[in-house]
Amino acid sequence: MECIKMKKRPTIQDVANLAGVSKATVSKYLNNIPYVSPNTQKKIENAIETLQFQPNSLARGLANKSTKLIGLVVSNYESMINMELIKSVETEAAKHHYSVVLFSTNDDISNERELPDVLMNKFQHLDGIILANVREEGIELSQFNKTFKHIVLLHRHIPNSQVDYVVIDGYIGGRLAAEYLVGLGHQRIAMITGPKNIYQFQQRVKGFKDVLKEHGLLGYCNILESGQSVEEGYEAAEKIVFKSHSPTAIFAGTDVLALGVLDAARQYGWKVPEDLSVIGFDNIYFSRFARIPLTTIDARIKDLGEQAVRTLLERIQGKSSEMKKIELRPTLVVRESCKRKEE
Image 1 (cartoon, rainbow, N blue to C red):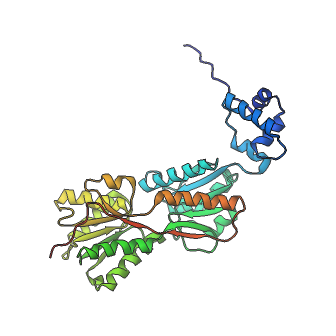
Image 2: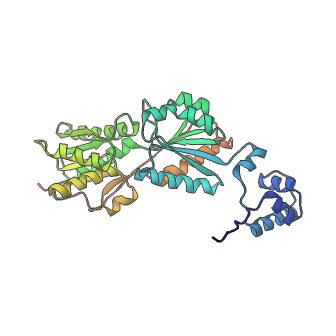
Image 3: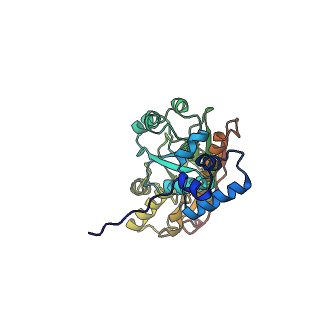
């Protein structure tokens, strides 16, 4: 078998040799320490480009006590919305020369509770952390705040006075969905919500119910708590539609649940939107490519991820001292899964 010799990765010493400067001078340049002349900087930059040198974040952090690493904790890797969050966070972090270390709790409360100890024991070098998975009875924020100095909650949060958060305004989103369906003439409107120990779902339900109450329709409304998978959306649709007062419209608390409703409609021959209007929440990438393109509430996932990174970096860099409670306003995205209710 032919032996292939692997090319040695260039080091700081290699850069120094090619630039004709000391290793310490290259280190100063990489860590933005003053007193490196413009002429020397140019030599180092040329050497880095020639060698295609990639600085090691941990090594660079020795000088400025920064590893250029942030952690991102999600509930699981399979979730479509989490995949979009991960992409948004990684893209924005890279713009600021930060790398992202990913963690998943597999949506398990016991794993969430143990997370501060796990991270402290193995990943205490992280500059900061973004939590995109919190729920009531899960992560203990006060304990987490002792473990990490810089924390931002993303997408899912618990109202608190300890750490920053960046979320969509779930209450407004719930209102937008209900107002749209009521405006189309629907009166028997059902809602499938995700777990109510997730505060974001509580807010979506509240906004939805407030609108129906204002229009005197709350008594015709059926709200069913579900999990968060397509299969659970399918099962919830079965339970709702086969009741004696089946709805003419369903608001699903996530696009994934809405995809489950559409799947049930296909199986049972319910015509969408002629017999049943369906609206989701999140505006995930695949919602526009559903069997029937899905009307939904845009949760601005890309904006959330970008804002969370910027908020965390402001903390890390000491540019912010006041707690930030950022709630982005959602918007309605109209596609083909809803229709005006005929008299």
